[in-house]
Image (tube, rainbow, N blue to C red; front, side, top):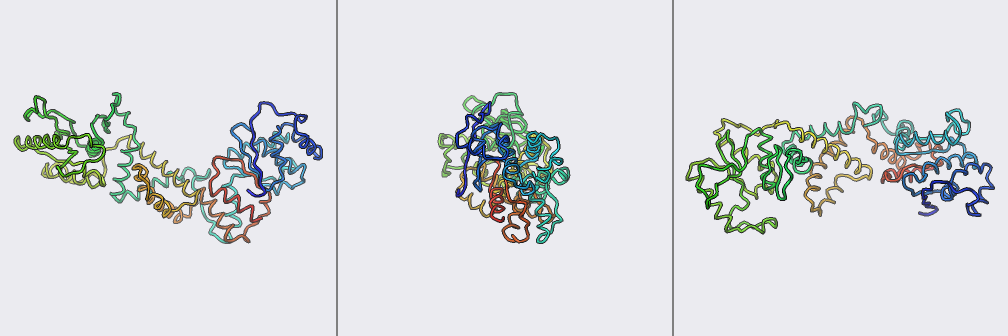
Length: 466
């Protein structure tokens, strides 16, 4: 950083008295008209407040005195440097930080209301979003249509809320059944705490279904969850009393559907030529296929209805597999019990909770992407080498939501908080002469971990536009 200085502040319980400051710092303070401003500061804080560099970065943890440095910096500029308060902009990230800074200024200035303090009368303390809003509504009127509303601001929070808009976007996209099934499957796979469905301690290698049944594999859980959502009763691994015994043990088909008098068997291996996945390397293929043949013969011998399910079918889109399963159920019931895949599956509270978690997750990533000015093509390019299944599935949902969300805001003349910063940057870059930069002479920002690319670039471009 050219012409910049970085200060690290370490919290101290008691400030260092002036006598313990370095000789150089003491000499600097003695030359100031109002050195008493620094009485409550330690050496590191004094150095940061006195900095003459165009850009000063203060790195400090919670309680280290960042706000104190900013407050005393403002007072130092006004009382010792004779800079009019109207040319100082104190900028924060949140309304809470703005209130805190005002309160601290009142406390330090020994005043109850800044509006009655002559030296602080025209001081501007604002959040970065409020500043951008002001610039767009005033200077931006020469370039943009300023008849916009803000998503999620304090005035419109009840009716124009970001999560509410994402909910509307998901509802619209869910008219596409493929997207709907994809969203439901993501929730079922990753966003539901299955431990709430059972009082049993989870066993290694077992999976819990939406109705609290412990099954042997994720695929069996997917089948059971499909049946639950379609309001189809089932019994898991119920002994088939009609079947011959297998070496003295009763035969237990995977699923029995009493309303259909039909069974579902899910095969890990379909035939001898099938290549096993790494997760099934422990399976003895020859023995498994021999047992499979015996089970199939039982259904033929005793004339029982069977739907065969195969692991390879579930490696593609589960929505395609569920259509297959639904069609098989129609055949087995002679179309008398089920006519089509239900558009309104059983309402299950954990699914609704998972839907809320999905909305929050989408909002977080939308804000992260917009704050860093990342567009859909970049996201798709970055995913080409991604191997993590959950990440791939999430972004398969995210990309259409992101595009639809942005189009919705444009169509409805809405700006979210990130849009306000990005639009202001665009205004400063493309129409610098339309901006009144007199209020941007000294910018100080009170925040650290939330500083994203857009906020940083806004600070940089406002600095260079003066």
